[in-house]
Length: 239
Image 1 (cartoon, rainbow, N blue to C red):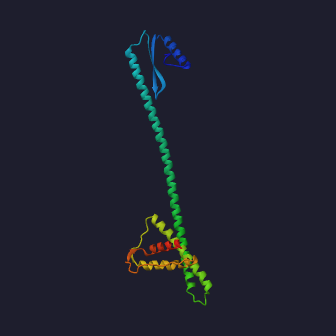
Image 2 (image 1 turned 60 degrees about the horizontal axis):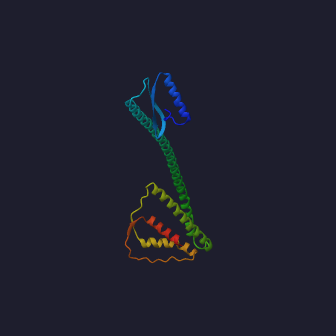
Image 3 (image 1 turned 90 degrees about the horizontal axis):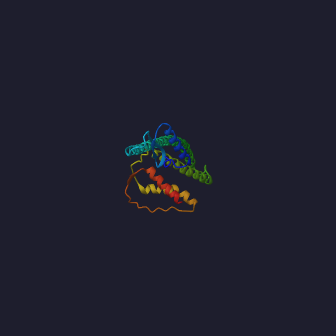
């Protein structure tokens, strides 16, 4: 046993074991190490009251020790797998909870955005309506300088209203509810309308928007409002 139990503490333990077996009337004993994951986990001891242990007994003891070590190692692996599985389960539950909170926050944000956009659209439409009435007033009732300021306010409110519509369209696109129209469109007229709408903004920047559009372009199917806003945005970004 001294060869098996290396080190002072282990050697002392082997000596106590030998004394115990001797006191029990055992004359011979053999100890076989039990190795688990490359480390000594224990030992199997076989003792006899006779003078020797047969080679067959020694071989059986060695095989049993190996099998016991493998069984302990497999049990430890199963426990490790269970711990990993439980940890993964807890992390998965945490991810599911976090994802649910994020989805709820996203739904709340979309609901608030939609509500705000709708609430902004109605007063903007009313403001544009009143500004348009002022622009329709004859010259003697609305001086040129005041008319110019009203026109600027009218155009600015139009751009703001377009931004609100864009937000509505984005919300509809995210909900897959945006249904573009499919009317026959006169592209030259749409381009000209966008040019007229942005001409005031261009003049402020000392720029001029010139059109060079073929008049024989065929009619196409599309959504006049969406395409018109695309053209307006392109021109607005340019000027």
